Amino acid sequence: MNSRQFGEFDEIERFLQKVSRYMADEFNEAFQEFEQEFQQEFERAFGGNLLGTQKLVRQGFTPQMDVLEDDASITIFLELPGMTKEGVEVVMSEDHQQLTIRGSKQPNESAQHKRVTKSERVFGSFERVVQIPASIDETGITGTLENGVLRLVLPKLQPVKPKEIPIYIQ
Image (cartoon, rainbow, N blue to C red):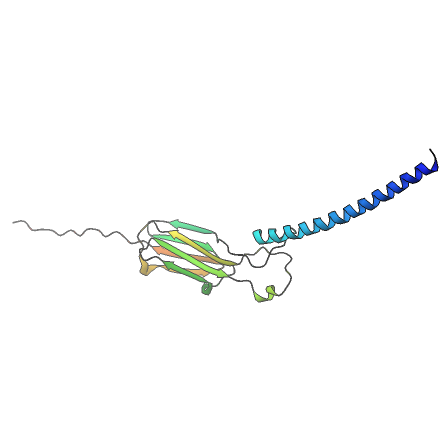
């Protein structure tokens, strides 16, 4: 082979390197655009990003609940950490068949002005509806919110025993 043939290979190699750099730049730019769009869609759909951080305010949450029943009452426990009684509303339906518990928990203002690197607490509104399987004495319903747990006691109406009236027979 003569030197002219090697020179042609050098030109081809330089040309391929230019094409390769151009394609790499174009690919990197296209990939960065895709990554940004994907990140925005992921945040919109799931309220967090791929790096494990989450947005500070979520759309809502579902507090954990237990419903216990005995002969005298129905007791409901609802986990509401960080909430006050002013942030909770409890309503009994007119027919006494449903109890609705709703509320809202907002982040504190100091956290809203800082960059969040990790957030596992939940914020937003919630609503839980409990079907009541027995007749309830609405005048005796009590509720307390202590240590982040709402406790509602719904006393059952005691069945009315038929009154016996003795009849004198002559």
